[in-house]
Image (cartoon, rainbow, N blue to C red):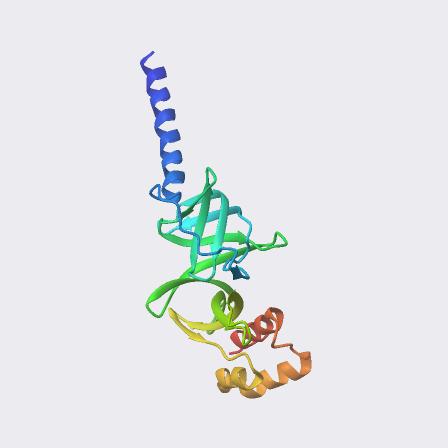
Length: 215
């Protein structure tokens, strides 16, 4: 009898612990004030729709989140719970998010300047390659009506990483050969031989992997 009570209490404790972890992700009970409205065109989100995600905390705990959305304008992640949107407040090391066609992407938190932001890691090695999705809010005025229109414009910015240091990457041929100046002959030969498209993720990844593999 005592053993049965003990096991029952253990089950209750474990269930409560898992549930409390989910609630911590849901925030402190305050709904998030949504900036997006009908007066603003475009979107501040990586994907407007909420989707399933896995979050890894700084303490290496993994939490499955049924409905998550990534705000690339302010670099926050949001959670839908009981039809209300909350800002995720836990210490997040990484998370997954689906794009508009359902492909899963992994985002890792890194320090950029004085704030934390999220990045995709495309290549690792002597020189890392990271990709960040951003959105900026721009205003335009109609010269005739003087009506102001605000629009979210999405953009992709690449960074190079050496250790914890991140630098914005100039992805032009000139910028990349300057980055790899110690192996410039080999890099130029690789680009020419493979007709590497430096305007695509695939081309940039191939070039970084080639450089990182050189002695």
